[in-house]
Length: 475
Image (cartoon, rainbow, N blue to C red; front, side):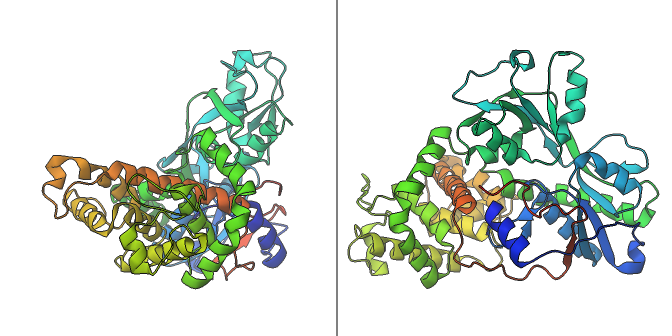
């Protein structure tokens, strides 16, 4: 459904579904001859990885697939282990496109418009003293993600005593893991990636930004056919105008920094001490209602912190915090019985999901069902009506989460059928569940231990033998 299966996915992919390996990459034939677009890509949370359902995912992956669908061609991804070598390989016609690259002058290539930015930040162990700047690092061991090596070489003119090593193959999470475990003292990584990884590594904090953000763009050979280049430019203009790009960015990063470190620390601790008692019940609920047990567990934690006796001032009770009326409709006789509550909550969220318009795709469908669980079906429909009035997409959580808070404003709720609602709380609710779900996906295995078939329109070449997915060692 969403995001990162991380090392679990890596082990299964390498062990069960080996990708074709090419030891030598030759110049590609024209796209017009083969009908297969070859794309140079890197592994990472902003580009290409294996998600919670065992499918390829990532911002760049989704963008490339969108282009391929418009062009009516297949895609072959060639994994490049080093970002720095990608311009040279594109210039040598090893691919029709290179994606997720820092936009800069490079011989033999042309760049499209910037669509994202990598903000370099320095991370440190929060139990240590927080450094105030690069001149405050002393003799600490500093590693720098390869993407930011050029930035560091420029900064070294100002800090000639600064010693650092380039991490040519490690991604943001692996560097943060090294910092948390004391293998290195500091790392300079992508800010967005750090926000995601801090949910898994709450002992690491961001100290400060290091230089300006690097704009990210696609690149193609300087002599690429003009019609192909024109289609690329038209594609990017469209996705920026119609909101497709914004929705994809939000899908991967919109909720990343919602949790505070204390929230993530507490959740990780209770995953080890409390969740094991209830894990079989969540798995049983998945078997009954077809919803990922980790999503149900994330929802339950947001509602009750996995406390079967939780009670709110509003009369909702139990693991899934059901109201008396909802429990009666679901056939839940005892809301304080963990099994009855979990089964009832799973049945209810599944009912809400099925009631949504068939035009709503995943994962937005899941997020809207969660919003409905919190705010109610009627108010969610009000929000969708309001979204249409405001020229936003009523089927997109990215758009709806900017509209739902307006349900508490008189100028808006007075024009809607069901009136006032505390919409801001609903947005926080859904985004927290998304964050907890991401953490569980990172550490908990899915019920299905074998991957479903990958998209038949996509093949992957891994010319350097680098593992597919996030390039981090299994913990």
